Image 1 (cartoon, rainbow, N blue to C red):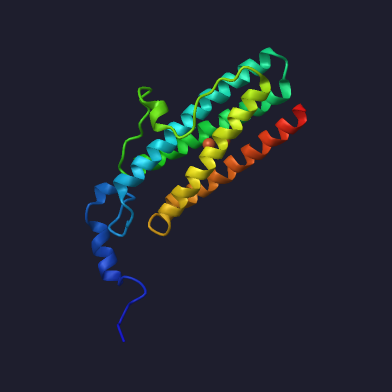
Image 2 (cartoon, rainbow, N blue to C red; image 1 turned 120 degrees about the vertical axis):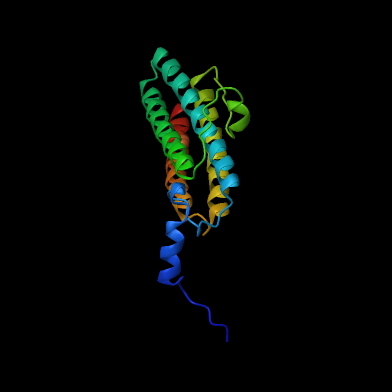
Length: 178
Ligand SMILES: [Fe+2]
Ligand SMILES: [Fe+2]
């Protein structure tokens, strides 16, 4: 008959909150491995930046060959990925880490690849592959966060849902190519 309280008592909670206040959102109860979380987030940040660059390239190239529908989709995705990069960088700082924006090694840190593609079909296929890579790696991150970092998990769940929409948009584009 172990006496296991459901919540930490108020006195302890209040005392703990007063310690290391410079850590801001990172409290004593943060049970994830912060270093690993920041490393994972920096890889996700690199992935998002590489995706912004690839989508921008595809946007301008598609506009050049009068593929306005695809171009509009590429631009929308580029902007979404930029938003994701910002969210991730913000979270890294909240966790008392530093977002890595160094162009050196960017492709090594990124999970997704940067493929320019020579035809519109190739561009769409490469974007779809990159989305599918992001989807699988983000799903793994979400599983890793579990209940140790619900805020990071929740954020990545939101981003994952958008990547799934992107993949779906791209499949639709691809189908209409044939
Ligand atoms: Fe993204
Ligand atoms: Fe995406």
